Image (tube, rainbow, N blue to C red; front, side, top):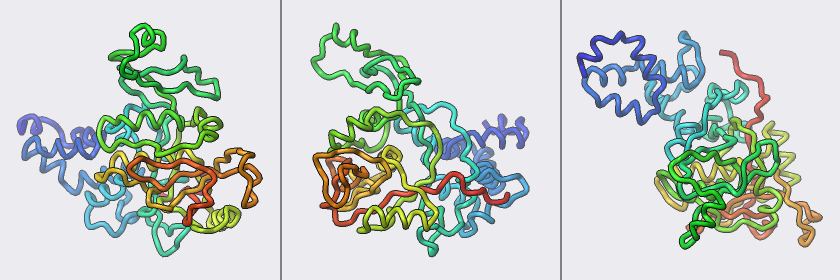
Length: 344
């Protein structure tokens, strides 16, 4: 293997390494001494950082993440806050081609003040999360409730073959074997996907209210990047006050599906099971997704409720809307994508 590296020119080899995920880079470094010397060089990690931050070869990544002691440390700390292609493929399934993070949400904003708390920086307080329209999984033992037509606003349900289900019924539903199934990303489907991850902690709903399932459960989600703030804002304030606070801080409220997905992705890759970002007892993340329920009307809601998630436990993440009993309700917020990008 050392001879193989010797006949390769360093530039093409370095370029090839930029297509690898961090765990693959670690494996490459163990191939032989020559590969280790190249992979672990500061020059190679500088290139990795420039690609990650979408910088020109002339720009030093330390100008955007100045507190890290090395380029390898910069890459690791920034990459840890990206819930992207690598996380999905390792834990759940394929997501196809993923576009670059838009300039308005650039990772180069890492060292800018957090709009919601200027004493902190954007980078450590946020995650950059890709939301796919579909996730591709092995179809063995699963099926969609109907043929998926992307032009329809309501997506089909992901079903798993239950023990004792007859073969004729299984064939009628369409359970596959050893092929790829493209599963639309919906509130209902991500529960089924994350209950059986390829690797990591299974995630589920401790409960999800019926009206949320009826009104939002099968709605599709357009693919794209968001920059989600990890912690909620405006705890214990009314929703109107939380809206005002979000506008004054120039952030936007998250919808329900992205906030659930954020919790599930962080949980599945975490080394600690049953701990969700919004999972502490009596903590709840309110979102902009409105669920209508005229049977409940108090606190000035008049039957229109802002749904949210939280109060996680070993039984899972709770998805609800009448959350007046929670003593610490905050608003889930994201950076607006239309914020002008910083100069290169």
